[in-house]
Length: 519
Image (cartoon, rainbow, N blue to C red; front, side, top):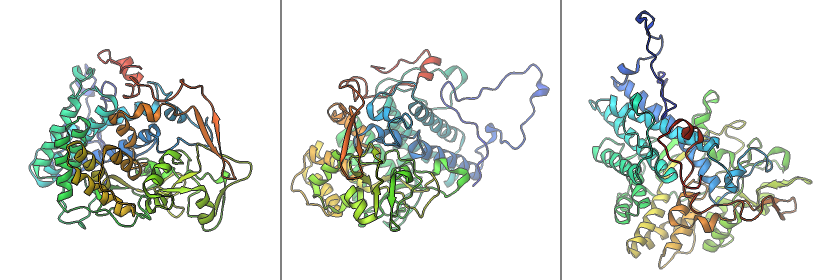
């Protein structure tokens, strides 16, 4: 579907102002561009508008180097930053926590979330609910706006609330009050769910690429959980589980590859289109994770991996691997499908590090879950399915909410559902640490770890030493830890890194904004 050109913007910088003219004769309608005031009148226009919002949603969620998934995985402790070496880009700054308010990824994500909000506001305000298509577009826009508000709240805390199309005198909005963004997300999600207009599955095998009612419910559950509203969160997650509309896919072999398409496990999945002229939002961030740079590896003919990846976020941490082993042993089924050891890379896939080479930010482990196969995509472009929310994430959060509300039997049920699929030992009881460990391994590389660590109050302990040394995998399988920084100069700092900085460009142009603590 071709989209008409709709101007979009962000706070203070993204909205294009109409310039006054002394001569009205110069006010000539622009050809081939639909006037925005007369747009969104038909079903087709409403659909075009919501497609534009979906496009921006995918871009902000996982569309590239300025997406939430990209940044959140860099800030967590399940992968190393990677790259050809430490000076290959600025990405090591995330792993080391030395980035500042002028960082381009932080700025672009912040702006991208407000671009999404603007596109949603256009639909919510300008589309009239006169048909099923228009009503669905409004409901979907509310869910997407709520997702953006959730990200802004959890990552920046008091970012401005923009719940309508801003007038010129509103562009320089100040900080919101703590919790105000969460409240806005709650309102949008509740209205969208109760509208009855979101896509509703009929059974487990009724597959769709549109966001579902259950995705909105799961997102509402997360909004509640992040605020400590544990009973309300449990209600949302348990209702999804009780619906019987979702199940874990039994086979993890191609879980995160192009072969692992939409399934009964997906609450919301978006499909990348293999279109070289439109690659940015269609390239899933994790498509770069295999990181097998051709100049550094020996390959045999049976090696399934692409050799034209960037190499960033290329390797899981030993800490993650050790947690897998703690739960299911060295030969665990889930472990083998999510993380590949260097020994397996050599013995099973005929792939090894060339003599004289070393692999930066690698402790001897490779991403198997989101490996990039050589028979899909082309150089640096990987049209992977984008699994925005899966049933396994619902089960992890449901188990946590159950523990926090003293529903031990439910917590055991949810964790053991995951353990059976993983072919791991089942548990007789569940505490919060059990949930944390299960979430760590089950949801690895999916961009939730950093926000979980901050929410649990575990970030300082887990991330304090990040970046003091960096591992380098040698051809013989040994790992050399190289010291680049002095202790105390890098890593997560309490009372600072719980929230991201507001972009320097925003602070320089908006006198009504107050920077987050520590920045």
